[in-house]
Amino acid sequence: MQPIAIVDYGAGNLRSVQKAFHHLGYSAEIVTDPTALADAPAVVFPGQGTAPQAMRALKANGMDAAIRAAIEDGTPFFGVCLGLQLLMDWSEEADTECLGIIPGTVRRFPSVSPIGLKVPQMGWNSVEFHGTHLVFEGVSEASYFYFVHGYYAAPKDDTGVIGTTDYGVRFASAVARDNIVATQFHPEKSGPTGLRLYDNFMRYMVGEARQAAGQP
Image (cartoon, rainbow, N blue to C red; front, side, top):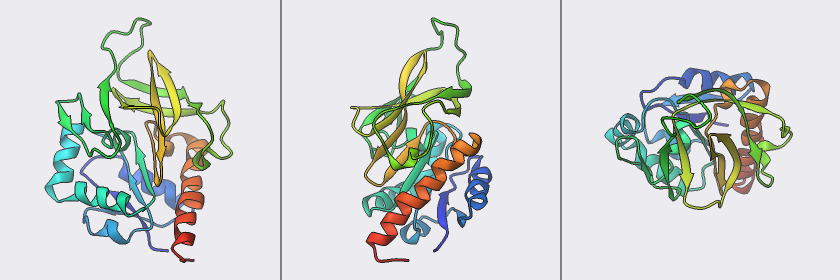
């Protein structure tokens, strides 16, 4: 199988995501060329940085269109943190137009929390699962995941919201629609439980897509 494509848009954390997949035995390549997404068995969009900087970088070389095309073609897609937020239509962060793949907005946590929570959220938090999805197969409801973010995705409706988290406000921390799965937390920073999500993504979503295409 060809390497999965990890989208490089000039932000950090790419190597840790790549190492996570390598640790699981999967080949992963960090790519800057949008054409690389067309033939990739899966696309991973990690997230660090700001929405306006990320969108400028994606648009500068056509990676935004390549991401949309890959998703429309049915390529399994995993978005992480900012990689979830940018799937929405628009972000409050510098009034930024996003990819517009999932209807919704990106909102900032209240600057002053009524219960004294610090913004951004940095650290471990739980996820309440909604329904069942193969990416969470074998993951306990008592599991905690690592978050680093001051903004959160707010889909227009609950369709595809498979996990929510409470941090002063309850927000969508995991979303899945068709060939898309995306999390606000960082699986690569969430220990063995986070790696389980990447492994499930590869075994189930990528594996089933390859079988449907008649590929080994």
